[in-house]
Length: 314
Image 1 (cartoon, rainbow, N blue to C red):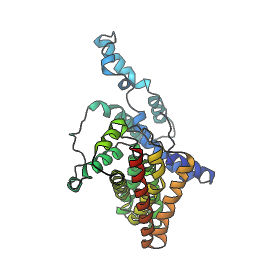
Image 2: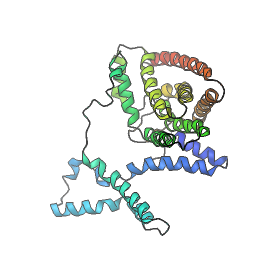
Image 3: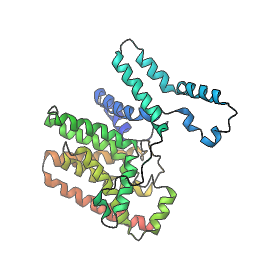
Image 4: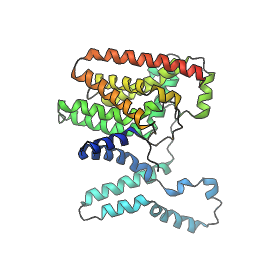
């Protein structure tokens, strides 16, 4: 698996340079937990079923290959080594093995949705409803979403239990935003050529297409920061979108589902992270009305981005 130019990796490197290995380790653990499941998949699933059926193997040989296939995955050896390590308790080793089995067997269960996921009633209203639903589904199919889910879900559980101090609200909000911030740089990454063709046929302005994507991104950001500092999360999400508007339109890169999204250069990522951190911190630490300049900056970026989308004809 490739390691993309994701903001999580940039942040981990920055914390290492700042001699803060604990935070770097925490960021790495969050990304590692999410990457653990796609790395645990069955190697035989990489073979197209039509070709696999053509292999000159009888039923017994196919069963034997199925039994051996888990050991073709390097993660199996890593999990086995971890489980039998002397410093690891039996329960922790069993947990690692169970998580590996979930990642290995889940894709083989053949679970399918009915094509109406995220069918929220409010998204059926207005011309942008279906576009927003489509972009929400796209975000849910990125690993960035699940990194933010781990951070936001853990913070919500700790706060509900009364174990999260108020001083942790802003750092938790920033970490949740950091997890999904790369998606703001790749707004068109999952659409592909067919999606871009459909955009040309829609009777919508460029800013409306971008607005649907921004609403989906901000909704996810609020979902993971509502138990922490939602207004700061809102401001940070707007700043992240505004700072990433140029690469999202001018440097469109094809992305893969169920992977960490790959952003732009380090300079662009650094600009986005600084804008996001500055906006969220200013709103949380100084005054809530500082969210208004964030709205103004985001509106200007939406207007500019809409013009660029129309000029480039997608």
